[in-house]
Length: 422
Image (cartoon, rainbow, N blue to C red; front, side):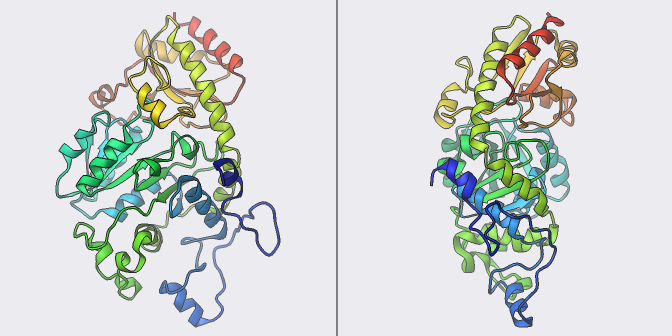
């Protein structure tokens, strides 16, 4: 099946009710046939539903659809994008291990890595994703993974995924791509060498700004068997009668351990209701991403030509240093989110945002409504001035998330707001 068909049908094979739409299963527990049936489930000798913290039929439908759209062997739904990241890192690292991350990513993710996870002994090194060789230079015997965003938030930079993947394979480390900003319709990182794909499904997957969620998709491409850097995969797990994940589960070792160990203990499971809303949103993902991308390009071109704008960072602009990579990796469009720098700095950016009537000032992105914010004051406010400048965020930077409204209405609102700052 092609993408547009899978986004509607994948994950729902029907049930005894013959319902056309995937039902929402609001239940915490499931009855067992007998005590022996329960024992087999708890020892992983048999698959099935035990408790909604571990799995749920509605969540399973979402996970199957995500895996189908991205080309993975399996997926896991989480409470949010940050929960997906934390559980992924915990599933790969122990205290003292390292991950090399792109520096131009969501500010909250940098804070999570550089402060919170650092307190638990997982260390991060930050490098310029525009220089693939920087990942190799930062790699040590403690490195377990590389992490990038397929489209950087908020500057919309596009890393060379295949080049970084080649280095990851050479160094034998896991390659993780956060694909939130592109969605699997515009880009499928697994096709370009990613081992794991992470999403904040809160954004484009849902598409209407209603429910939170996150997900991890496993390509099943990394071989953990016998690798001494991943002892948790190669030593017996006493909680499952001495199960050795890499030996018993092969390609499914990561995604199985993620569910049966990390999710079991952390408990960051997605609500079945949120999973159901996300499934509804995904049915129109391709249509929305096409409109998001065409509207965003029109806005970027308008802003680039406006005298109040210093610079526009959108990879589909021919002036962008990432235009070539965007043409290679994002032929269908580059999504809706990017930044523009206003002349006049912070005061001009604030005046512009405050003058908008249709576009709202919101911290979210990927909504069908157009919205803006000032990253230095909001999404990246945890970062120092030096970190902000290093990423390319200046006091006059405004992040745009362009929605599905009529493009003439969007540009008319931008034009009237810009008159107040020229």
